[in-house]
Length: 252
Length: 252
Image (cartoon, rainbow over all chains, first blue to last red; front, top):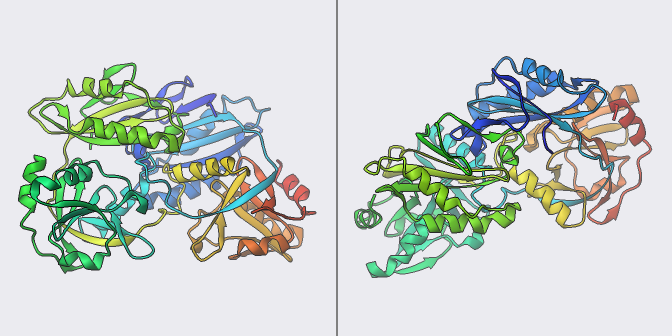
């Protein structure tokens, strides 16, 4: 749905194709909120209710909502032909707020529907990164450095922004893509180097309670390289004798 | 992490604060991919591996990946001081691609970690909307108009972009927020009007298999108003005698 009217906080109505979001806005990775409203007779229907919902959700994302959103929305509506229904979207990120109005998509009034298990989405590194950022915020609020996601059947999966890597005997392990995790680039590089350390490489499932007994447990990611897990759910894990060597290999 | 270098496909390096994403770019709602790389000695480490992963994920989002991403990344790196490690983020949306380089955040090398059930995130209308858009794409690919998310214990929750509303006897129902669903503005408006129809309003849980026996099942949302579910998992549902009246009330 291409927008016909675009209004930006502090700038008012701008030409429709104008870029509005900075490259370093956390909104690019999904940190932000939106509302969709029907514009009817030139005004947004249930505007207060939508603004209330947005304001109520903001604390969960640590987002400060500007006070002048209603004004922003109405400035856009003033440019929309009042005889035409419009689809208004209001977007609020940590760095900006903007709204668009486009024609309402065709309505399908009689639906064929299929049920679908509620799930966390595809194992791709998408811009819908909010759940990962929320999990890291949860970790910080709970006095730890990071989270380790666990499947419904109790297997360790990955960190919100890192792959799980561990040494089981002589096998350097990570979780198989079949578990629904994103394949980690740094983890794959480490596993490819396992033979140079006299190890095999393996894709395995592991329960968190088995990790304190292995030869090393790490979170691997592009920016931090290899960070060693030393406390897991309050249980202290022994320091691995291999961490320094692996980190030197990685060059971090 | 504020970006120091920003490069945009087709525009090259631009001043850091320049807006780069259009308001109607589907990337605003999380339709897009990203990769994070370490810039070391002035070049992105494991660039090919990161570009490969991005390209491999693209079909799942129906995304066309431009061929000149490596060039874009290298043009940004050319502006980064080679003696400094950098955090490079490459973002690819349906309408644009851009990359940023910022200083690497401080590394925590010894981690305290807590396990966390893998989940679909918070019940807020966040810009991490990819799973909803993916579910609607899944519905279209499976020959239906929409999806209905179901909880692990078998209860109907909501549509990817709409609330579930149904009439059970004389009670107009929707799912309680305690189920983890986003409170629907249109659904709330309808329930508030229930007494004017001689009905009560109720927040309840319901299993999909109970829905064919009720007096009407709808998906409610701001843009389409009230769409009646007439086929659910292949089972035809009777047409509700109330749909027209409710839709007229809503003004759609």
